[in-house]
Length: 125
Image (cartoon, rainbow, N blue to C red; front, side):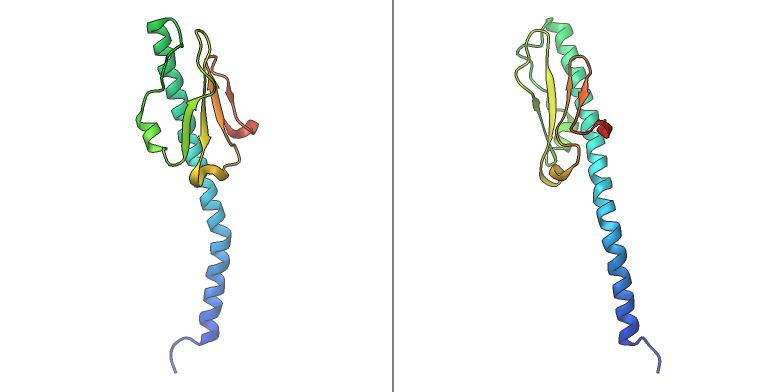
């Protein structure tokens, strides 16, 4: 008469299910937050490339976003592009979430030539 009863086994299954229901949403939110931080770093890196372009050409016009490692790393989660067309003195780069990151509460994040960072929520940067 050794072993587990069906009731004991069901109690363990219910406990595991409850813990999973609590832990999984927290886990996915932390993964999104980590990807968001990586995207913010990538936006900063792209803005630095734009400043180097300006130093060399004295204009942002005709600049293209370089294909950096961070962009290829986040290709399934963010789309990096210009918001509008860069002109001689201004640019804005945006990171638009997609795929599994589309549910991120911060939405599209941007940075411009002045270093001004924006997102849908104030606490996202």
